[in-house]
Amino acid sequence: INLIPLQPGEKITAMIPIREYEPEKYLFMATKKGIVKKTSVTDYENIRKTGLAAINLREDDELIEVKITDDDSDIFLFTTGRTTMGVIGMNLTDDDEVIAMQIDSQGDAVMIVSEKGLGKCTKTSEFTAQNRGGKGIKCYKITEKSGNLVGVKAVGIDDELMLITTEGIIIRIHVADTALLGRVTSGVKLINLSDD
Image (tube, rainbow, N blue to C red):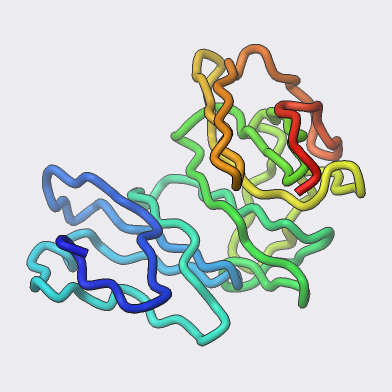
């Protein structure tokens, strides 16, 4: 609250360190309803103390991720529903939400984790690049045992990952120790969770 005058119910989504405001760099935003927006970082060079509206959101939408990127990077959008088609960022079915956005330069695989503690790594090369308006492809086999997806991060084989539960329990794992599995699989147990 000392840095940003947050409104009730408002929370910080992303923190991005910027050393220089280069015109060829952009902030790429994604919302849970599949809307994406790319804006030059130079638009944020002189921000007043009260902040700046970066994206207009519908009442039922929220910002889920912001990344710094350039014009040549591929963007990955991950949803937690079973089927999706793409338009704008992605056109989602009624019960589907975007839960993560990653950039191909962040790692050569993605760690995908479900709400019941299962997860896996899948090589980014298994995902075909598509234009906006293309169909999304399945990245995870969602089952009763796995639950919905809760997070995706781009990783390298030498990385370590920390999983944090809603009860504040944390586990640290080596990416190299997890299963490298194809797109249409559910993964293996990464963390043991209590029922709730």
